[in-house]
Image (cartoon, rainbow, N blue to C red; front, side, top):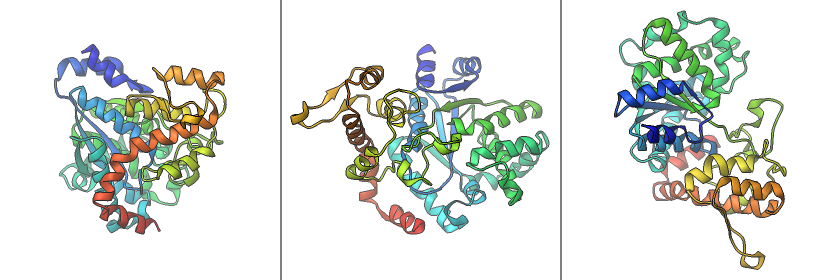
Length: 340
């Protein structure tokens, strides 16, 4: 059990709670987990961090479901709030996630909301909470607390996300730290409703290449900031250009380039190589992430080498996804057309 737990906990920011996770692992050989994604456009590097954790969960014996949250995307005005667009987004995500984490299962929110008892549970969750709590949870959508005042449907979103967990009957809810409010709501409501509480597992958020902003949402990698996001379809040339402008201070704190290595590239590639031309000494290999970090912070690894090497490593990680799109480009092309 210790080995399974170590694999699950590797690289996570928080587990609520570890003792519950231990009980789960000791009582079930094949526990279940879920993570949800809105169909919102082309995937970026930050989308892959929880997907790496899905790999760990499956290797640790979990059955993992990805909820392709089309109804949630509709509420959150994704892809222009158009259902035809949302369906394209769902199929595109299914294509990409199947390549990155083979063996994962899929469910759509449309399937869940049509099940008997779903909307009854949404109301039960709502009755177990307060408007203040729901308003605070709007951050899970990337929204401010005032956005619900202009669109009442947004207040349903947190209660729906909690209900998704119950409807899927999963033991563990996975998400980035930006999903913590929803997971805590689901746990609190479950206790009041006298149903099983999910273990909540939270992965780190990749920082925007433009550096820290005034708020947490400003510093998170997001497609809404094209210069600060690394799309999984970017060519190596585009990645190199974006990384060349990245905020990369000579320290660890708030360094988005080191974030990429610690949270995505090292666990995703299983190696640390900074590619350099032979005339500049050739490639640099590091035994561990801490070796890479120490080399950069000490000044022995030049920022330009770090940035160029990061771009090459990202392109290597993205290549299977890009190859899948190249062989079956229909969904990608439709989505690009929708996004304009």
